[in-house]
Amino acid sequence: VQLQASGGGLVQAGGSLRLSCAASARTFRPYFMAWFRQAPGKEREFVAHIQWSLLSTYYADSVKGRFTITRDSAKRTVFLQMNSLKPEDTADYYCAADVVYTRALPLAEQEYEFWGQGTQVTVSS
Image (cartoon, rainbow, N blue to C red):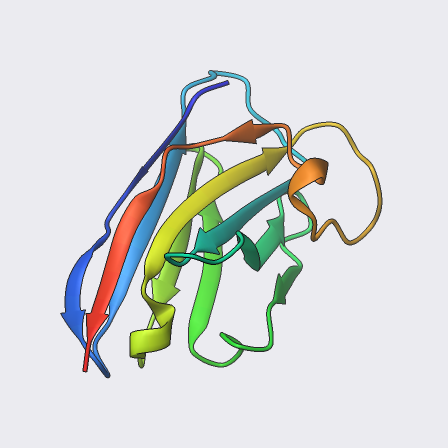
């Protein structure tokens, strides 16, 4: 499975961006799809995930109420709508797929088997 992330860019604080991540596999039914991010000099951190079949979602506290994760199963694509962006949201954003069920709330990197390339998000103050 190859994941292709896109949609990053430069935006002013308070602005919005929408990230997309498309899967190449024709048959694609992960358990979860997630977004992680990595800011310069920091470790990669969990942002949000969506359970593919039940559509339940979970967000990091830092983005709750501002970011929304959704998916389009027909297009095998997951989205991250980011509103009210802050300079501290500046990072490379990565999408990931959990295709081997590990637990009900996968938040760690090692629980995701497939990763897309990063897409850079820069929020200016």
